Structure formats: C-alpha cells, structure tokens
Image (cartoon, rainbow, N blue to C red):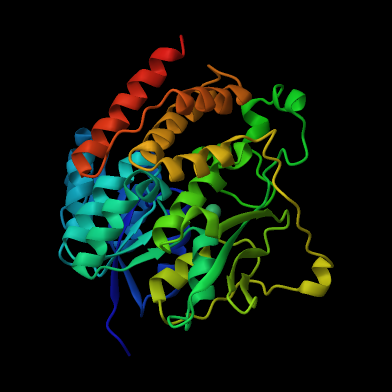
Amino acid sequence: MTAIKRIGILGSTGSIGTQALDIIRKNPDRYRANVLSCARNLSLLEEQIREFEPELVVTKEEKDAMGLSRRYPKTDFAFGEEGLKEAAALGSNDLVLNSLVGMQGLVPTCAAIDAGTDVALANKETLVAGGDLVMSTAAEKGVKILPVDSEHSAVFQSLQGNDMNPYRKIILTASGGPFRGWTRKQLEQVRVADALKHPNWSMGNKITIDSATLMNKGLEVIEAHHLFDAPPEKIDVVVHPQSIIHSMVEYEDRAVMAQLGLPDMRVPIAYAFAYPERVPMEEESLDLAKLGQLTFEEPDREVFRTLDLAYGALKTGGGACCTLNAANEVLVGLFLQEKIGFTDIQDRLVDWMMNFSPVKADTLEDILALDRETRARVLETVKV
Ligand code: MG
C-alpha cells in the first residue's frame, strides 16, 4: 500500500471540487483533503471542514476566515489571493487540484509549481493566459501538470505508452452546447437561463456560458497547444453531441486512439489523482448498444465565431491569448448580469481582437498587467 496522497483543493465547493471530494470520501485509504478553499458557499465549506478536517482552509474574505478559525481551532485559516498562494505552496500537499474559476487560478498554479508540487489542472484560464510560463517552469522544476478537463484528459490518456510515436493530430470533441444548429437570429434571442442549460455536462456558470458560445472549445484548443506542445494546425475540433468520445489522438499510421465514457468529470479527476494508476469506480458503465449511435459534425464557425478567435490568438502569440481570455471573462460576467446580450459576447470579442496589437507577455507580472488592462478597457467599451 502506498502512502496516502494529500491533496490541496483550490475551489472545493464548486462542481469539480465537490466531485473531487466525493472521490476522496470513497477512497480514504488513498487520499486526504489537505486544503479546502472557497469564495462564496460558506455553509458547504463548513460541512466540508467538519467532514475532511483539512490542514488549511482559505476563504475569500478575512472576516470569514476569522469566524471559522474560532470554531475550528485545529485547522489553519487564510484568506484572499495571498491565502490561495499559501495554500498552493503548502509543503504538505502531494498534489494541488486547481479548480478555481477564471484568471484567479494562474498565481496559485505558479505557486504550486514553484513549490515543486504536481498540479491537477481544471482551471483552463491558467494555461490560456500563462501557458508558456506555466509549462516551461513546470518542466524546469520537474512538476507534472495533469489535465482534468475531460478533453485533455482523454488526449493525455490516448498518448500513454506512445512516447516514441509522435502524433499527427489531436482531435478535440465538442458537444456543440445548447445552441448547436441555431442561426444567428435565434442566438440573438438567447437569455441567461437558456444559456445555462448544458445538454450533457453539469458545470459552473462561467464554463457553461463558454460552452454555449463555443469559446470553451477555443480555450481548450489553446490549452491543448500548451499541454501537448501542439502547433495550432495539429489541433482539430469535431462536434460530437453525445459527449461520449472525450477526444482523440491520430498517429502517423492513421491509427486513432480515443477515450470514451459517460460524461462524468469524476473519471478525469480520478485519473489525475491516481496517475499513472487507475482507481476502481462504482459509477455506471458505458453501454454502447443502449446509446445506439454516436454522431459527428463540423463546428459552425460562421455562427459561432469564438473558435476561430482562439486559433487566431494562438497564431498571433504573445499576449493575444491572455487578452482574449480576459475580455471573454469580463463579457461573460456582463452577460450573466444581463447587461449585454448573448451575441454581444462574441461580437465584442471579435472587435476587441481585431484592434489588439500584439504585445509580449512572458513574465507573470506582464501577464497579470495585460489581464488587468484588458478587463478595464473592455468594461469601458461596454457602457453599463
Ligand atoms: Mg472540457
């Protein structure tokens, strides 16, 4: 029996965080939740503290950390950005699961890497905004970046055992989101509640809106580029509405390796936790005969323009992906507050990227500065 793996969970009350804790709950002889962190859902956080008795807990606000520390004297508490950094760098973590939402995930990822701790990465903005920096420092430190995004986990799994065989292409699958097949006119009528209904996956709000605009797939193209050192022309996207094939790798001999399964994020989370082992799960098995058919189609790049924006940003390089990500985060936030329409997200992104003059953003400071500047300027352009 190997030692218990101590996992620091950043974002423990979100969709990925709660599923990760479910895996830990069912495998107490393998894992321990070493760190918990949460911004808003304090009642759930408190339940988690009682159940998992972590070493350190991070809240967003200082007053919440103070309040909890009085009730749980055996646990250490920290708060805010500094708290997340401290939690990510905590020496007793064997692995950090970064399931924070958005750009706030970048600094803790870098902190975990600097501490020499492997990272299970569910925060895609980390790689989109700072992929070059993150992957190069991870390589220097000998730190593993284990993908938790289902597509990248599928690619990662399909690459196993093929170190000697270069791949020809990475094929990311996309569900197409709730508005697959819709016209531009129909998209203009979309309300927040419609966009929050994803056909296959149950996820947080930001990623659900990104899936509806297809920006999620664009961000995943950029993520794949960094994780697997893939030039943009070696990354394809195919729409696969059933979300059963989670992604594929084509080799030089035209053999295609795929990873299949029911849409359940616990599988990629568990794989990242146990890699290179596989841990038994009690979930339902995939029944192909019951499913009947798997279908595929081209993404509609005319109606959904975000995918090409991501490819464009990747080719432009420098800070283009960082600024695209920041602008998107702001616009999705404005849409969720019903301050702009659904198609405004992509229209304003297209405008923003057309007027963006490439700037370098290699260091963490440069990336964070470009992110801040983009947010401020995009907010300014939307008179709300
Ligand atoms: Mg995904």
